[in-house]
Image (tube, rainbow, N blue to C red; front, side, top):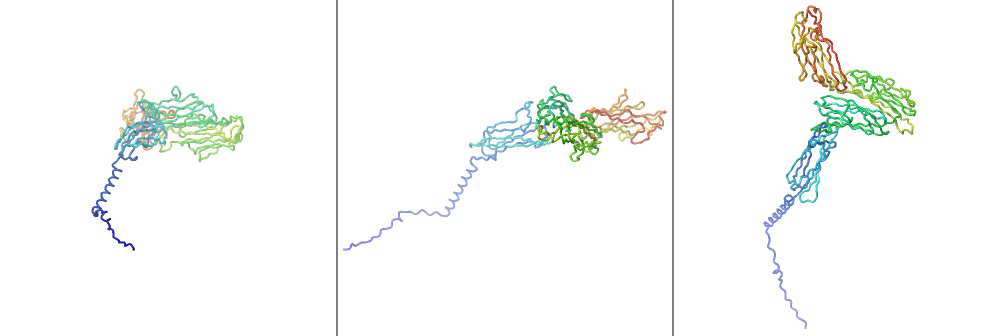
Length: 596
């Protein structure tokens, strides 16, 4: 019997076991999304702006000070720092470095420290501060002096330390006292040597308490100097240097060294400030110990100390020699002329050839036959002649302290191999100062613009006539010290005690005992009466009452008139005489002064 199966469906109970979630409306969903975005933005803002943060750019530091200055001037450096971050800075260490060759005064004494350091425990957010340092800058015109500042610090809770740097460059644009150091470029060992330092005040004011300190090279033996310095022969004190004033220091000695060795001379100009001498300016020059095979020397007008004047004729002699035991072939001699006061058009180069492009006179074997084969201990000389210009170049403030320079060089490349593989040469220089003379003019007026006229003219017997005398000075050259004008009134000429001089100038006086009229000017500055400046003009009145025996002739009013003084640069005496004055010498009534 087959089984009988019945299929009974099992009811689906899953629908009753799983409960579907409630349905969210679109409105609620929208607000949930907005809330989530707001929470995200708030969290980001707290992370980026609300919490502790640090930016290196927020730590600021700088050095404030001048970018241009004159040498020897005091500079004030102002250090500024600030914290514009939101973090506290801690353990701040500052290090400030002065520029090279700076002079720092502390408590009136020169400090040897070239660096300043200071520290700050903390610098809160938003805080700032500043600090000042002072120094005197020393160097030459055009030097760039750099001050440096460094800062190391920590920020907030960060373990890393940070560093920040700043600097300030200051250019030296002016030099108050010009220094010209003449150092022979080459010198034979054991031979006498002369160092020359020329200096002058380039400012419009006097400079006081100066001191020159010479640092001689090894191998130099000091012998003498003009003017004499201190006992050690290294220091020269200048109590006061007036505007435009200058002078020279010449030092003589012997220099020893090995051939090819360089010997450096350094000069430091110091100034006394707050009781201490600080470095003001520096200059230096070097000499190379040269081969003694050839020798050369230069003199002008038979002297190495000759002082020229404008329009002067200069006769140069260049002496040469072969001091070796060898015959030297192919010798050449050259002299280079330097200085604006040479009148090149007047040059007579003798047997030499003049190269106008380099202002150099050249002698070779075609000009001097000895140069084709210059035997041992052979000596000779070459000569040339030139004038100085008749006056200083226009537009220069007196061309103060002008000088000219002739540099001779003798050489040959034909040298025995056991002596040298290259050229053998020797040089010598000669610097010649140019003394300047003021222009002295004497004028007399009957009808002077300032004093007018009084009495008859032409003069008449028995009647008093007044005259006004003007003494005028123009100084295109060096400052003149002890400047003085004087003249004598003959018998019968009266001093009226009426004078006029420029502001700040000494009065004109009259000595009854000697009948001498004197204008003691004292210092006559360089540049007076040029480039639009006023000349010195001193005037005074005199009178005369002609007598019967003087009728028909002119009367002598002033005699023995002269200007005198000393050139402050060359130390040469200056005397300029003027013609005697008579009643017939008036500038406004020419040749009408014969007594009627």
